[in-house]
Amino acid sequence: MRLLLVEDNRELADWLGKTLRQANYVVDIVHDGEDVEHALAAGDHALVILDLALPRMGGLEVLRMLRARGNRVPVIVLTANASLDGRVKGLNEGADDYLAKPFQIEELEARIRAQLRRANDRTAPVVSCGDLVFDTNTRLFSLAGETLALTPREHAVLEQLMVKAGRTVSKAALSAAIYDFETDADPSAIEIYVHRVRKKLEGSRVRIVTLRGLGYLLRHED
Amino acid sequence: MRINSLRLQLLAWVVLPLVGLATINLWTSHRNALTTADLVTDRMLMGSARAIAERAAVTDGVLDATIPPAAIEMFDTGDRDSVYYHVKAAGGRLLTGYPDLPEAPEHASVGASYRDHPLRLLTLSHAVIGAGADSPITVTVGVTLAGHDAMVRRLWLSAFTQQLALVAIAGLFVLLGLHRGLAPLIRLRDAVRSPNRSELDPVEVPGAQSEIRPLIDALNAYMERVRAQMAAQRRFIANAAHQLRTPLALLSTQASYALRENAADARQEALVALQASSGRLARLAEQLLTLSRAEPGSRRPRADSDRPQYRSRPRGGRPRAGHR
Image 1 (cartoon, each protein chain N blue to C red):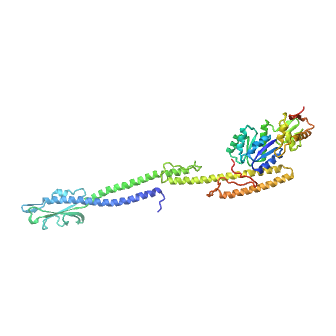
Image 2: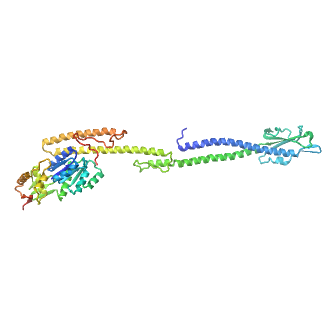
Image 3: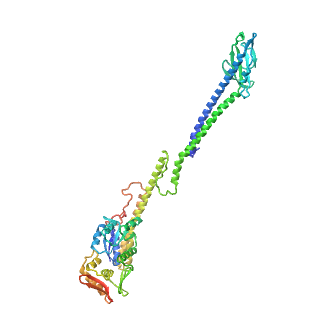
């Protein structure tokens, strides 16, 4: 899952990014309200974490602009202002959730998971495809009860396919979901990651099917 | 003696001079009463002496004086006055009356004493036609002062009663006026005391006099200053709380990262960063403390007094105040 973190305090942004990457999220960081729209257009972000006190363009303004353009990406607002008025205003402008600083990272992660569940029309925290199970709380894959060891990229590929299980995911969409801005996106490398994941899924009934010219599809065979 | 009650003070200021004036007035009216009684008594004495003198006549070559009863009875005013008189011929021969009654100078009345009674005397000389060497006769009439004094008392008492009533009514009106005049002050007190005045909004006292208005205005101005100071303090505390929120979030994030990280060097890096953050946070707290000593109570104008700005980050960070 690729997240966009908008926070102007660089240090907090860096460490939040690191912590979220620990949990196998792909995280892009921008420090400025005006960069948000551009960043969202360039990447396929599943969720935005938005600080309200931003230079040049305030968080509420960013939110208003996104919603005005019909962007429905889930947004969790972060703010140092925990007043009722501030919270109501943020939610009214189209925020999906609201978290006041200082917060515990566990709470932020739980709220991210809740928003992603809702965005993907799920209610259970566990997603499965045959023997393959993805626990969104621990963010770990397991195959037939055994935890699957995956690199961050492999994890991102498999998570994307899992979330869209049963539907075709194009190479471009996969690429947009697994690369952050700091990496040179290399679409041909996707094939390598898919290949490695396939190897790790060997021996189970779960298959990654290649549809030439269309993309990939995760499914399990009976 | 100090009088602390405004009512008593004003009452004293109004009533005491009034009593002084009334005293002077009473003394004057006593004098007037005395003059009036003297005048009345003198007129009666003159009337009585004339009546006696008119009766003096020469009959058969002999000068004779009889006392008409009316001349004596006119003094019968119910005060048991005694009337003394004598009539003498020009040579000093007593025609009738009390021989040892003193005489008064011509055409004047005097106070005198006869048989241990003070009395008022009047002597009249009157020519009697045909009396020859015996003319003119002198008629002296004296009356004791019971009726005179009673008249003085009556005249004076009525004046005294009037003045007393005047002072009492004045005092009553002073009290009444004060009660009405002080009512706005009482309302002001109630308004300030009122339990539903938790906010320091201005006190409004309808009907307050122009003398009390400045007090109310001063009170309101004072409350406005207190309110402004309280608001400044509240703003300062809110700002300080905001200042601390982001660094605290950073600390907590770094701690969480270190706890979850398995790689020793990455964990080390997080712990070092955490230590640096906590040092900066301590310095920020120190700055806030210093600022708190200078800011909320300070009357000195500051360039940006209601929005303190501090740098929480050393590298190119913007101040974090002003969260909406």
